Image (cartoon, rainbow, N blue to C red; front, side, top):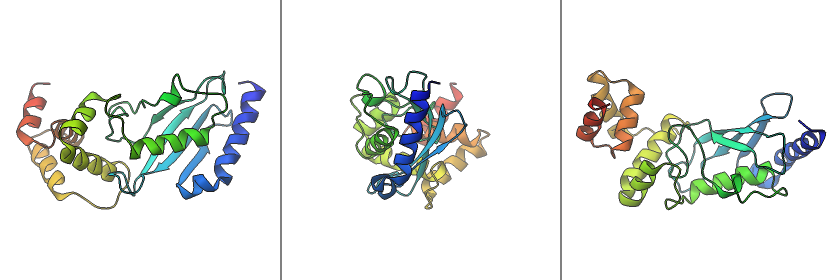
Length: 200
């Protein structure tokens, strides 16, 4: 990695640590290796969203050509959101693609991702299944997003109804993750989830 890129990352790293905005929004950044090519960000779930109270980790890969090209960022913590792949954690956000500008920083990226959690864009989805649920069945979407925030994001409360439905499928011999995914994708309809698991 070039000296310019390393110096820039060091400066941005300090900026996140010192930024009042980052502290107020509960955003953190840490180095994963000493070469400044891999970092890890942490975002807290925004208030008044299904993600509130959760901590979500993103993996950040810095390309050789940084800051002229955007960092590659994806969720390491699983999350149910129209603009994030529920399988890979890939994020659909314009500043991580064609709207990137060299003046942007990692602080900008983390705050933008946090803002995306509060304002999903279901018309430009990364995960069509989640986006369809968001558009067609907001109650099921909210239930699923909250459940995933509890299971993966560390939110303290538990949804007894979801847990019971997962147990129902586990008792039939399916594993917990398979059961959770099938129920999530079928808006917690047990029959449809079972059908999809048998058809895999």
